[in-house]
Length: 294
Length: 282
Image 1 (cartoon, rainbow over the protein chains, first blue to last red):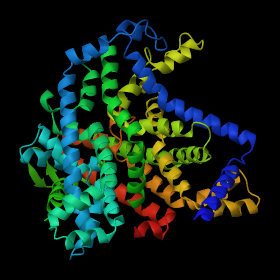
Image 2 (cartoon, rainbow over the protein chains, first blue to last red):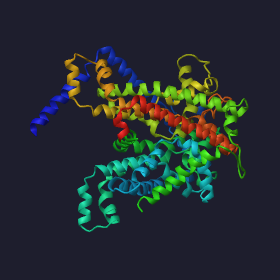
Image 3 (cartoon, rainbow over the protein chains, first blue to last red):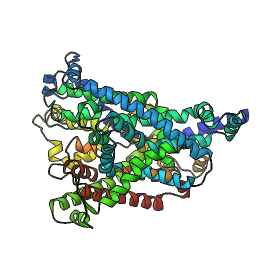
Image 4 (cartoon, helix red, strand yellow):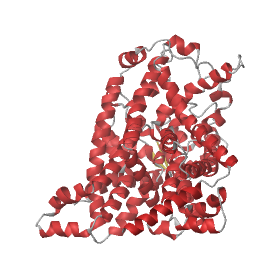
């Protein structure tokens, strides 16, 4: 054991040196590139955040100035003039409910498709896999009509239904992959203990798959929180619209209240950034497993 | 039993819609009217009418953007991943930062860029003015609409970087041992050893980058909305306009069929040329 550990460590040190063998100009060019993409990604977010604390006049006056004093007027205005609070609550409800539903329902399917053999299983898998590759932008009209027909147009349940399905392929692949990696003895032990199908799923398999669950949930959360096109298509009233749609209003209504606009942008992007930074491990493992399996 | 809810979701949101799109693309279909019209919808897509011109432009733009995604975008993501794989100082921060534009709301990003490139209060012009060109006032989203919209996604390849980086981390170390024996160093190791080994993930990235252009909506809708004129129109935006604004469902669905066909074609092509059997068997 110890021997291999030492061996491995030596190897790692070796590799590190190898990878840094690059010549000086090569390293300088690479550093410049990395600095460039970092700035490119961070500057817009930082600029918007700083601007959200500026007054309207300061925003109009100069793009590169700092706020003379920190003012929350933009945020107050965003919540007062715009129905940002309603949108925010809607977003929280739609995102959380659709995440729970998606994970639970698709998790069940993933479990069956991973652990059991039955007739037609491959057909089901192939069919479900196609949904991963479909450009959903091509399906807006029928989905719009279907949601309307079942009476869920312009309602939060309508969005919840669609978002639970939009995350179907990703969750299925992540969860199925995770269930496949669990030892089969776990299931057999549950069966010997006399646990029924539902019990062994809820009490033994699902908790064992927690890391996979978390990964799928984080991706589903980000998707639902950020989703825009279907929210735009499936709602048309304030009471059922979500935060990203609120931004749509700024193109017209707020044309003159820029600090409110910047404040609203911050309100929309901060939860995603927080979730990503805090749960980065889950996001990355989800993206890599989902993509490679896809 | 356990499968039932997922199958219902699948039928409702994927299977029935895709069949509807296929079938009704042969119909003259609006609010309540539904009459068979054969290939009329498809014919008008390539006719000289406004619809035809819009469609040809949308397909052309979509294809140009796909081309840029699978070349510039993927190459940039791979290059950054190679840089980060050497674990320079702060590499984790760079990885996180570069990923941010890929995880925040695209609608929000659209509004951010709209402001960033604003001729008066935008940061881009603000910086150029601060650097001395005092009267600089370019309206980016009007005067250089195509270039500006293109930049808002082509340069942000954080997802590609993350995928490639994860794959590089799984390369067995002995490989680099033999690379050293061969006397390779720096970029030569990357070019002759690392890149061939992450070939499958590059293929996956190419598929993701290409199909992302069949989904791109917010960054155009929030900024140029396809304009000026039809300069920045793409397929998703045109489908949205035909279906939801003009209520021409049959026509929108004919465009949907073309979009799906392009997607299938891309996946088949990439599978054939870039991926080995390992990918197909998983």
